[in-house]
Length: 339
Image (cartoon, rainbow, N blue to C red; front, top):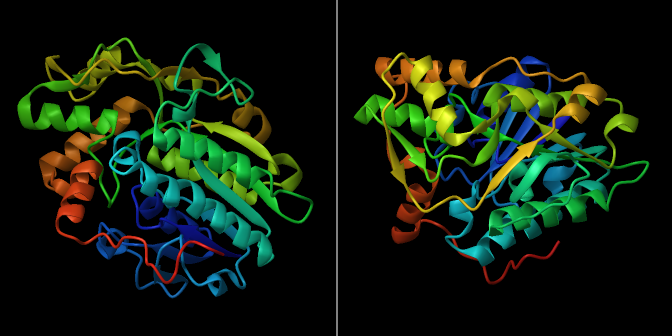
């Protein structure tokens, strides 16, 4: 089976591509490579991997020819980065991804899997499932919800569409990110002996290890279409719904350092707990990793020098650098954003 993975050189994609290759898939990776091709250095010479440097807003549709499934992960990747330029976020995270879904259907791709986010739940009480009301509070979250709605509307008997609402991801990656909660807490302990905690610490978030969320995409890829077509799945586990301050204490315990923290930012406007019963029941999916294990692997990698902190590991900071250096290519006038 031939798979097209958009955003394949990113934080999750650079973990998922080796997993796909190991399972015997042929992989096309479409990416702008803003963070470099070195994130795929371990597999880039694999004959079953094709790297395509392009943009989901205007790539040549012929890329779709012969593709059996699309895993659509290309996006400006979190709430803060989405606010750097809301219009560009909508152009990429919404219109770009709907373009990918529409072209996939046009070129007879059988499966399309959208990487969405639990951030669309915003601020709500109670345990939220896939049928609960959404409350997107940021451009990033709104673009995810709009992409879900438009992509799922394309599903039919010959085009299987699934949306995966991922919990907040943590864990090691070749495209390391320290702007994610557990990863950033661990880095704070390593560098300063304190964990930075976003105020006021009572907010809830669901979490999932990067390898576990990657496995969820493979589960959908391999599932019978009647189980996943037109469906939305929350990706994570009920046990990993955590409040932020107790999570910080858990990270400290995991890496065996006295718990010290410092507040940062304004009080978080997002807080949500999520049910993951559906994916467990329908796809027999369960996670293998815990936040404690994720924190330990990151801490050990920092101590050994396997990973280091830099501008590239903080998404917003790197995007700002690229903008200031005029390295991000704006809309190309002659190409536009048409199919």
